[in-house]
Image 1: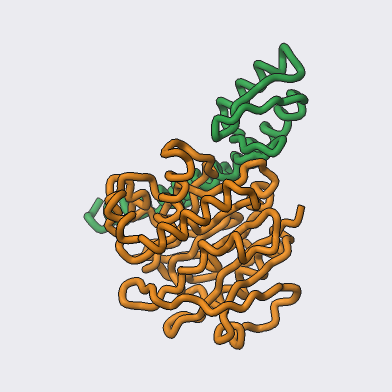
Image 2 (image 1 turned 45 degrees about the vertical axis):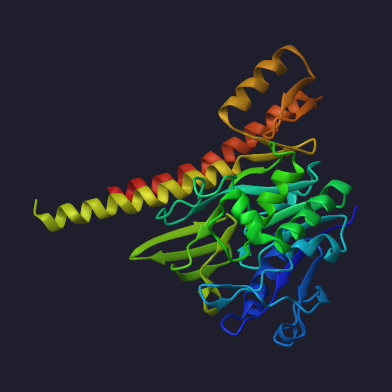
Length: 249
Length: 105
C-alpha cells in the first residue's frame, strides 16, 4: 500500500505559506519519513526553495474565500481524494508541525477515515470547542488520514456538496461561521455519511498556538511561545501554529 | 508580605499551572498506542483490564478508543506495550513536574 503526505500550500498577498511549508516538510521528513506531495499553484511554486524529494501538483486554486478581510485559500481540500497519489493519505495543514511520529503510527490503523474532534489552546485562554454554537461537533480538518474506499469517496463528495451549498448547510446546522471553513464542511459530511451517528476519530487533542501569540524560538524539537507576557515551552509534541509569525522565526 | 510579592506569587502559580496543563495534555497524547491496526490508550483503565484478562487467558477481546472490538492474541505482549507507553509518557511528565516544583521552590 502506497502511503504518503499531501500538503496544500498557496501564498497569499499577506502570507508566504511557502516558507512555512519548508519547515513543515523538513519535520515530516525527519519524523514521518513518508513521501510528500505538495499541491500548489505556479505563483507559489516560484517562491519555493528546493526541498529535496518532494512531488508537486500544480493547480489553479479557487481564491474566493477570505477570513477577517484577508485572503484565505482553503477551498481545495475537498479534492484531496483526487489529488492524492497514495492509497493511504495523511493530509496536514502546512502550519501543523510534526515533532513526533504519532501520525505515522495512526497511518497503520484500519480506520478508513480519521480526524480529530478535540484541540486545546496552549495558552489556555480560549475554549476551542464551540460546541454550543452549532448543532454538531466540529472536527479539525487540520489532520486527515484516509484510505481510498467508496465510503471515503462519498465523504469527500459530500464535502464538495456542502462547499457548493455552504449557506444552506450553515442554516441547517446553525453554524454561525459563514466563511467557508473545512472544519465544518468535514463535520457535516461525516455526520451525513455516518448516518447521523458516531464516526471514528483520533481521540487526542491538537495543541494549538493561538493566532495572537508570538513564537519566540523554533527549536529542533518544539517551540517557545509567548502570549501576553506568559511563556510556554512545548517540546516533543506535534503543534498547530495558528500564528503565522513562525515564518519569520 | 506586600501586595507586589503576593501578585508575583500568584503570577508564578499561574505560569506553573499553565505549564502543568500543557504537560498533562502531552502525557495523555503520548499514551496513544496503535496495536493490531487499532487505536488504544495506555491509560490506567486499559492497563488494569488487559492485566486482568491476560492473567486468565492468552487471547481475549477488547474495545478500541472508537468502541470497535479487537481480538488481542498476545495479551502479555500487548500489556508490555501498554505499560511501556504509559510509563514513558509519565516519565516525561514527571521530569517536567520536577521542573515546576523547582521553580516554585
